[in-house]
Picture 1 (cartoon, one colour):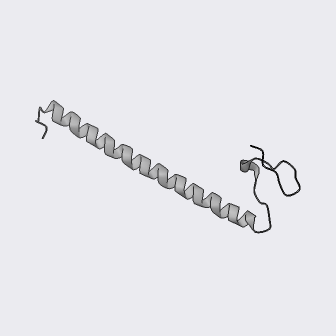
Picture 2 (cartoon, helix red, strand yellow):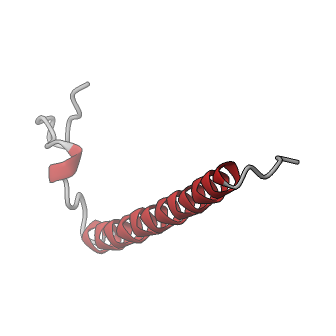
Picture 3 (cartoon, rainbow, N blue to C red):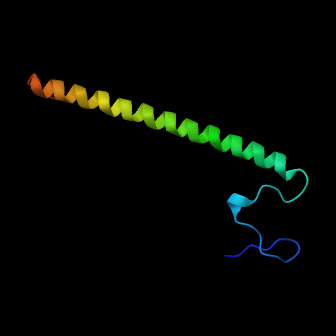
Length: 71
């Protein structure tokens, strides 16, 4: 889908669009910073989840090697 600007010209792709009017540049910067924070949070949550899975796997391996019955 092609996006047109106010002058009827083809607008740049979203990654290239930094501002449309005077105050949008600052809003864009805030949005980019928020996105980076969210991506960082997502990465930290993923790492935490992988650590939990790893610890659980090690625990299961240990139980298996010690022939402990599963409850």
